[in-house]
Length: 490
Length: 95
Image 1 (cartoon, helix red, strand yellow):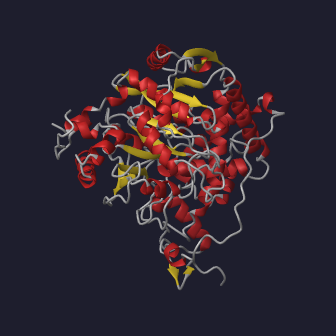
Image 2 (cartoon, chains in turn purple, brown):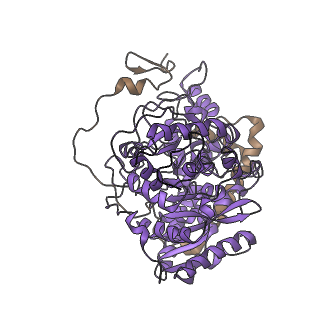
Image 3 (cartoon, chains in turn purple, blue):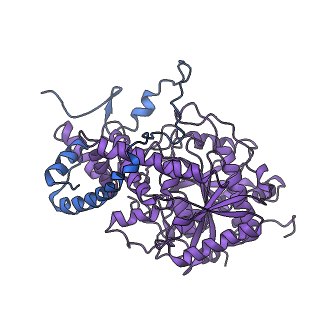
């Protein structure tokens, strides 16, 4: 590609698949204008999103202010992030018409870095789901195979990046909601350490787990974006007051001698053998790059799952009590009295999965059951976290599968929520411990993408993204586009 | 541990969520499937562990006691389903 070649106005493949640093270079060199770039991606959204339904709303691009690291780079927010003046729905009827009156810290920082918001991405309602089928605004298709789910809850974000509708998207991860859809859609996602990214203005699901992060094409792009999003925020009482290292600068480091822990319990009967093969091949690449592997113990994933599906609903039942038909959002028609107003508003405004989780959580916290459920689950959280701490005495990062299978068919688990929850068996333990985790594209099974999960120590995002980056120097999975995304260029 | 219809109704009332009769049986079986998994938490290894509320065992930080928020009543009320003269409107509570 010659450097003085001007971008074709319509779907230039070298632009839609370009890295963020490459786009920034072309913008800085004047080969490309920010408005032109935003329009090009907006045109792709217009042309391709009707097939995917990855966005709930579109936002007219506003010219970037200043010269930040993301100046002129288009993106979409998971529709859980407040951006002042944008409709912010959390994919719920409850907030279907609610316009955010303020900016999330994440939005403030990305805007400050010059990123250009093009829309709000579809998701599972209030981030509760693993398939993006629990959205008031309809399900999302997987760009690699429209009969498959994109994963969830950040399914719209992952699908939009996979289809190259935007260079990156924000996501949130409470039990796997960044990593699982990133795996299913063949894109790179990072869930940072709990507290690394501010939760201010991010609509709460389960506050002791919720963590904002990035979905992008590559680890390098994740590093650029996360560097802008992360950092202490006095408006979030659980925000971590720790310096944010230069993630991009850390990308050049060799991984020779790096100790990669392989959790032996994760390569069991529960794992689709073909997924296991793809993940093993990815680990072989890390070894070829000089890393050493060591077998580690991470037992009790089933206990982690049981604990999570009490703790997260318990926190949700408390967080979602604010949706009462009084202060914001939906209200039922002609309430008879205040009780009727609360009950009908919530019954009509929430979808089935949200109601299920609120009821489980309410039960787990109700008088007489608190010790048996909530407190017991908190102890299980300690057990699972201790397993990780022990494992990290033997290794620097942990590598394994993100999910037991590739993306499942749409509708496959609709009738069995408990089965659907098993999709999160490798991601949930990471949230219990508050560790950073990534999903990195590692191949395909039956035409559907598979992800390699990398897990780091607390606040070790720089190392994690570098390991993913070193892997991506050796393979090209992350550069592959689904046919649907390529068709736009024909 | 499984949930009876009466317990379900009591929980639904606490949560201010109506459980329609046609949904009740499916819902009960979904909730019971979730609660069944909770039996794993009977594991005796958990007995002596300290419950964990925060992944980093961090205590809540305190900020300086300074006014940082400005009055944005009108903007915030704009998102309410019904508001009048600076107040949220609800159905009559006292006859």
